[in-house]
Image (cartoon, rainbow, N blue to C red; front, side):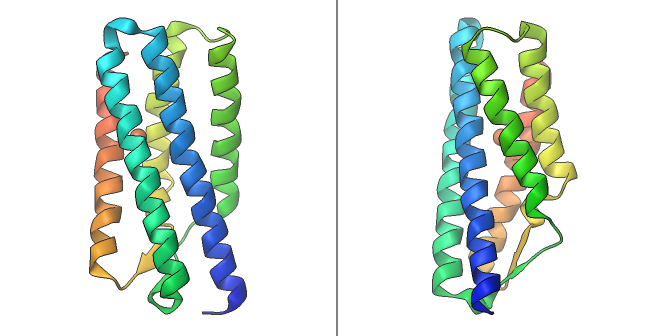
Length: 152
Ligand SMILES: [Fe+2]
């Protein structure tokens, strides 16, 4: 793998990490806004933090074993748009500008879009351990969507 390709992958992973932490922050705000559902939102926030830690692990593996990794069919610009959007929604949440109905359905749509846009196929690897991670990320995201639809 070229230095450029490696740098592109680590930049993508930094953004994935940021994205998961933003989701965690969003759910943390939800727990505050919906005290009766805070248990569910705390669980979601915890999962997103674990997802961020998984992406940290992936990043370290890319740095240590770049030849075992390659880019999948996914463009970083898609992720940049999501990150910017979630940031904006978090500040609106904090300012009390979002309607309660919208808050949960936005999150459900967001989780859905991660699956539809093949977020978790953005990287390919020949390392078995990490293939399992991508399955886990994909499955938990699908579960989050279902949980949120139940909460809405
Ligand atoms: Fe999630």
